[in-house]
Image (cartoon, rainbow, N blue to C red; front, side, top):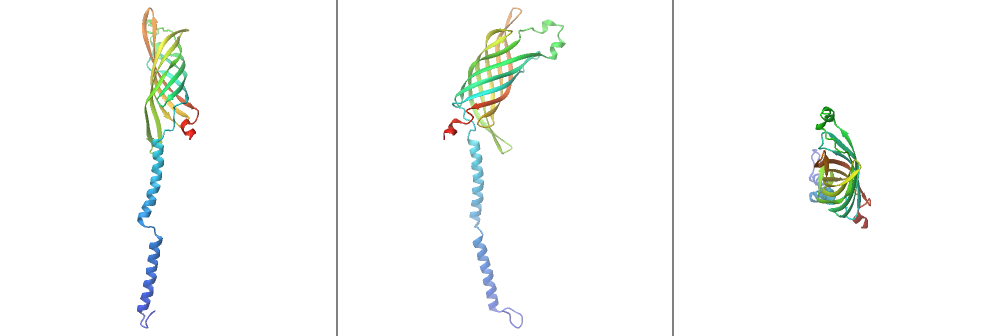
Length: 239
């Protein structure tokens, strides 16, 4: 209400005050309290962190009781005159997460490098050793280290480090003789059924050239993929 002089009366001020107070009360009632809003945001972050922790703590591949088959490409890295390269297979049965029996075989071919052509006129500088055709045998694999790392803060990659030893039979120019194999490698898991493998193997066997016997040590760099069977983890499938 207004007075004849154009000023509000006390009753008009009371009505406006009541309207303002009612609007303020309604806004406060509808607006969630700061503690509740912070709690909702915290729950969202907690859920995301929980999912991330599960991906970090869990193992994507459980090897115990499963077979694995690795197909690899092998190439020598310590012979400047003759490069030996080829392909091979390694089958493993994992008795436990860290121990497995293995059966492996590799076929190789030899290729002379340019250094051989440079010294061809000096035949005594190029040892005409019998060519290595293949090697195969049985052994074991031990996995002492299992780890994981974050890639771009979004992907968690699981990997392990393994060592292996095996008794081998090498085929040198049609004749077979015993040999030993020692290896060190790592696997990066791509899921429950597959992993990428990178390793270094040392193949040692006796050689003879012009009546002189010696121990030959070939270092092979192996890269390839490993397939686990069954394709799903046994422990998770039984749940």
